[in-house]
Image (cartoon, rainbow, N blue to C red):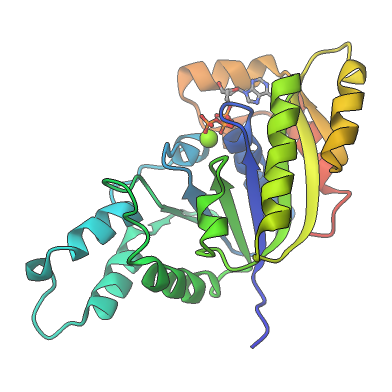
Length: 254
Ligand SMILES: Nc1ncnc2c1ncn2[C@@H]1O[C@H](COP(=O)(O)OP(=O)(O)OP(=O)(O)O)[C@@H](O)[C@H]1O
Ligand SMILES: [Mg+2]
C-alpha cells in the first residue's frame, strides 16, 4: 500500500528551537490549506502543546504504563483493542486542521521496547488518516531509530547559531545515515541568528554535509510569547521568525 501521509520530522540539540520551528511549520501548513495534520510530540520533555496553545491530559506513555497492569484492560477487550481505544482518546483535537498526540515520558528504562510494535502499528494506522504527520523529536531520535515513525519524507535538523549546535546537527545526520529508516530529504536550519549572520559558522556547516536551507533570526516576539506562555500561532504574520519559516518552506515541495 502506498503511504499518502507526508511525514515531516524535526530534530536537533536541546534548546535550539525545534519546537518553535515545528509550531511555525504547522502554522504554515494550515495557512497554505495543505490539509489535515497530526502533530506528534515525540520529545519526552513535551512542550509542543504549549507552542500550539493546547491542553493535554493523556500521553501515550501513560497508556503504555496502564496496559502493563492486566487488570486495567476491561474483560472482553484485547490489549490491542485497548491501546487502540485509548490512543484515539489521547488525541487532542482542535478547531483548526491539526490534532496533537503526545508520546510523553516512559517510566523507567526500555519502557517503549516491549510495546513498540503495538505503538508502531497504532501510530501507523492513526497517521494514515491525515495528510501530514509532523513529529517534534528529541536529539537521540528514539522514535525514528526504533521505527515507531516508519519513514520520513522531510527531516529538518535544527541548530542554533553556535558551533556546538552545528556539531550536534552533524551527529544527527550521521545517526540518520546509520539508520534503516528511510529519510528522503534532509535539511539544516540555523535558528536564533544575529544580524551579523552565520558567516563564521560556514566551515562547521560544511562539515555536516547537510544542505543549509535557511536561517531563522532571533525574534524578540518569540522570546516575549515564550515568557508569557502565548501560543506561537498568535504571532503576527510579519514577525521575523514567521516570515523566515515561510521563506524556508516555500523552497520545499511539502
Ligand atoms: N527564532 C527565535 N527567536 C527567539 N527565541 C527563540 C527562537 N527560536 C527559539 N527561541 C527560544 O529558544 C528557546 C528554545 O526553543 P524551543 O523550545 O523551540 O527549542 P527546542 O529545541 O524545542 O528545546 P527542547 O530541546 O527543550 O525541546 C525557547 O525559549 C524559545 O522561545
Ligand atoms: Mg522542544
